[in-house]
Image (cartoon, rainbow, N blue to C red; front, side, top):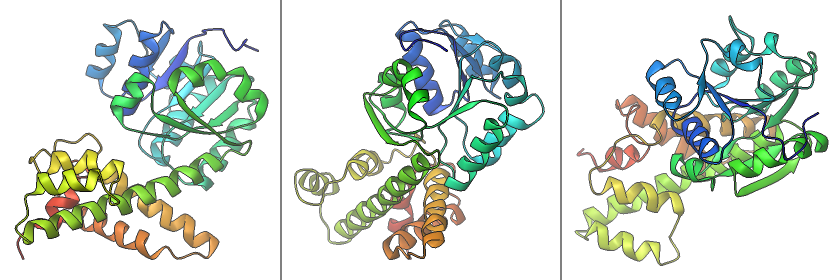
Length: 296
């Protein structure tokens, strides 16, 4: 077992916006990082700043104490762990997989069960805060895993996040917490987009209106972050619309499983679904402002 202050190689599968931010952060702190991504350009970019690249998740997993999975959804997670060239069959008992995608609690539990059969530990650790915060280590991590696994990898977790939330010892609870958070993020973003669309109809200056909201009771972090760019016409994707569409849908499914109906959450999820239908999937999730301000 590694000591908490050991800096054994860390593998990251998926070095897109968030995984790439995590990799850059660890490299800057002197951690040995190994990466695998379907985009060879991303791999080469990290190779140039000191990461080791691999041709498959299996090759990456062989020498890494912790394999961080940072892909988009449950299907991709299953593929990189258990598909052809997947990491899990190449791993030894006692190694650890850290699951960072936003997926359903049931998927986390199923993946954890499959890995446990091989003696592989699981850290359920969805993240929040965006690429810039992943890069500077100030993102949030919602961690659910047994205490001994947490302590074994405390140094790594603290290197990744200055906002480390210890949720429980039960994998799946991190996912539950993330879905609750992201449903509220979706509600807040749709609400902020809606009121700024209304402000525009009223003839108000949108920048001034957002200035007021940011210093008043209507303020939300995601509203400020997304809408400041949106009113400037900047919809370059930092977080694609598809992500909050997926996450709000997953949150509604989790709510349904408990017999709870989140009315505002359903409105938000429906709005993101409409944005996808309107062809805005590849835009930043601030595209809901475009959706709400289009004529007609």
